[in-house]
Length: 394
Image (tube, rainbow, N blue to C red; front, side, top):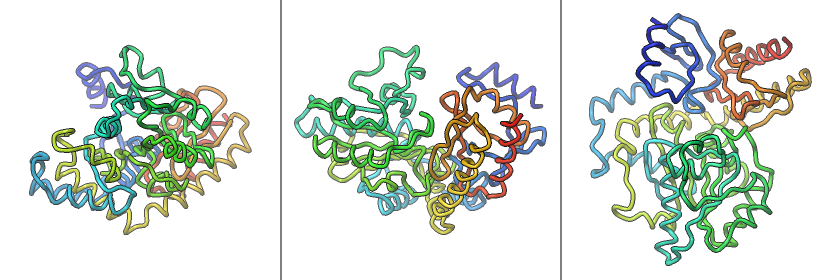
């Protein structure tokens, strides 16, 4: 069956992913199984999506209940789950308003549009440019790949959209030089995930906030990978004592169901009036019900605190491993968004870990990334550390 599924997929699906030769069939908590019955401890979690693990019974029940009542009616009407979710996000963040989409790219697309329209409505149409960071990742729509500071994802899609420029992450002087009278926003991730698990210098985000205030520029934080407790705070910017004007969420918001959200202050969000933006499937009752249950579980089970504690333990173990292996150049990250940089390419190691029962992935060619469910146990971390030790020794 496995070979048949892989062969059929390769014949009928667009070849945009280089998939590993396994067919995953089911999951439970931090474990997934393939069609041949092999078991894997999941340190990818759908790329930082399944924060509460796979097949969480409460989320499954919430989805089943909602599916029997109302799945989709469009945003022409009010619905209870969507309203509850928006209220909860506002209560838990700096924001006053929420716009729902289907994905992180769609949330970032909304943020880009809102920043530009804010200044158009303010009588400053010349302010449309956005400064982003080198090695950033904001999505693969035409606007979001235009805002992404990695040439490799733009290859073949030129010309990209006008109005985006890039500066090195953590270089406040370069950012100061790039911001001018045509700038409407600075857009960045609090911690660069796809860019190599790169954390900001202690004062960098605060300096960005001050620069934005000084120049009257909006600050957009892309928390699609870093939000929802991943770094040991509900939102990563809370580590650095700053508040954005616009923030985007997705990935873990509904623990695996597709949803994106753009949050903004009242002042900025006012630029999105009737008919200015829309999303057919944004915040459907079904997906919103899953997200509401996800937020409830996170609060009731103190998931963010667990992620902070478990992440610190994991990072300490990786640091100890670095002392034993000279091939580890650096340990990066915060909470349960962690990575180790090796002195050489790591792609060939991924199948080795898979054979030993662990799912991990790599970014930027030389970094092993670990983004397990936030419910990961220390015993699972210990098992991975032992595996890492053996593989790197060999």
